[in-house]
Structures are given as structure tokens and as C-alpha cells.
Image (tube, rainbow, N blue to C red; front, side):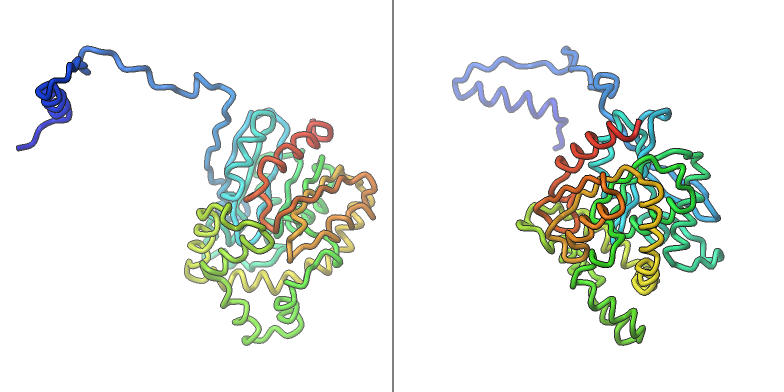
Length: 331
């Protein structure tokens, strides 16, 4: 025989009384329950909302939080991530800034129609994100660039230098001396783009490979939350996506060729720059962070005892550094 929850609780209390305990029954039907807390009770907690917007024939997915009239921070992710990597950083900035994090084409939930005939190069990624800023009517913004977000964002700066108020580079490289030994398999692929070298890289684009990417250089990998690399691996596993990533690995050689142009922009524009860097990163080593000072003497460089995915282990340190830096340079 089935009983409802209230009958079950009443019978349980009565049973306890039968064993000599004095129990006061609580009538749930006669008592008003506490009012459910709403966001109105906590007006300072920023909400992050998901959106799509068409830009250059592509449905760009992005996350946004913060006041619509606040200074804009554009967060540009890298490989193999998406805007999901900023899920905890966004609310730590959005009380003061309008924070916008798009997914690059080939990543996350940005949708590229097959009929678009999209060619996955860093030039193309930058043009799409530029079209995204146009569609969003963003005329002034600070940029946070990580990994692939750096060559994408620096191209964006070349297209419209007057828009960029400040740059935060978290392991986002622009100097050859910043390329670590971990690039050797990819550099071999640049020199000899054979199927053998392509497949050698392909073999690492798995769940286990993504787990390894996140843990390299991390003193205690157990602190890394699994949802990031698990989502990355799931999105990589979509039909055709691994080949998109391999095309971008090959095209990264063109980023290195662009480094002198990026450096010329740094010297000419002197954007306020904070390089906050995982010093144990085997891909983009500390020399790449220090190199910014050659072209931007007033650049601030901070090192953290972690690897490439510094947000996974040092979220608070990075958000505090950003708030201090942007509070001065991005009003």
C-alpha cells in the first residue's frame, strides 16, 4: 500500500512515541514555509546568461554578464577549451564590467553551417570575432587572451587598435622565445605536413589526452575539476572536429610569422598589459611573458606556480590581479 510523505512522517513519529518517547508532531500543512530566496535578495550577485548572435554567417555562442553600460571585457579562450573555461571568472568581474566570452568557430557551441565553406585558420577566427564585435556594437574593450585567444585577439587589435583599452595575457604568447619544447611535435608537422605527423598529433586528441593537457605543470593535478576537460573531449569527439583542430595546429605556424606584426603593434600603441602566467607551462614558457617588456616597458608580469591552465588552480589570484589592473587602466 502506498502512502504519501506526510502520512509516512506522522506514522513514524507515532511509532517513536510507542517506544516511550515524547514527540511533538509538526503539522506541515498549518505552518508557512520560509520564503524562497531570490536574486532580489542578493542584487550584487551577477548572473551569466548564454546567447547566440549571427556574425559573418556564423551563429556565435557567447556568455555574458554585468551591466550593459559598463566597460567591456572580451574573454578569448584557447585550445581545447571554450567560453566554459571562464564560467567562474565571469561573475568575479561582472559586478563592475560587462563581461563577454564568445566561443571561437570550431569550439564550444558556436555553429558554423556546412554551406558556409569555412576554412579554419587563425585569420578566419579573427575575422569572425571582429564580425562578432561589430554585431555586438562593441567599440571599446579590454581583452583577456589565453592560448589561441592571443593570436586571435592580437589580430583583432591590428584591425581596430583604437578599440583596445588594455590587454590581460594569461599564457597567451607573441614571441618565439615563449615557445617551449612541448611544441616540437607540432613544429615537425609545420616543417613536414605529412599524414604520419598529422596522425601523431591526432592520437592525443582524446579524453585522456585532454586530462593530460590540463594536468601538465600542475603540482597537484587532483585539484583540477573534471568538467572542463571532459566537456572539451566530448566536443572534440564531434564528427570532423579533430580535423578542424589539426588544421589549426598546422596554421599556427602563421601565427609565429605574425609575431613581428604583433610586436610592432605593442610598440606603436603601448596598450596597458598584464601578463599573468603559469610559470610551469611547457607550451608557453616564462620567457614569453618577460618578452612583452621589450616592446611595452610598463607591462606588468606576474608568475603563478602552476601550468598552462592557470585558471583551474589560481582563479582567485588571477581575478584579483585583473581587478586591480583594470581598475587603473579600463574605466
